[in-house]
Image (cartoon, rainbow, N blue to C red; front, side, top):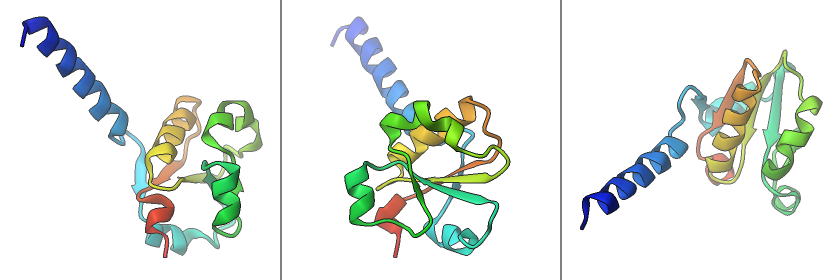
Amino acid sequence: MSVVVALVLAVVIIYAIKQMSPGNIRQITTEELKAKLNNKDLLLVDVRTEGEFSNHSIQGAMNIPLHTLNNRMEELERDKEIAVICQSGMRSLKASKRLKKKEFPNVVNVRGGMNSWK
């Protein structure tokens, strides 16, 4: 393997790891989410597709599919804690990072997503 190929591969791996790591995003479990669901200062945002959401969702969750999030951020209240969920936790982590970048102060990612919801 040439040095150039090894360097490119290393950069790709580092990028992939960085994308998957939570960074400065707080993580909560589905059990922790359940304990917070009755809190009126919590907004639960489900970033799965409309089809996934209509098939199975958590009561009170707001469906904003990830691909529409950038255009719908004005629907979110900045003074509330925003818990973001998807099917496995990957799309919600992306969404959480986008919200943090747009200076939403209190964003948490639901680790494991709906796959962990019991």
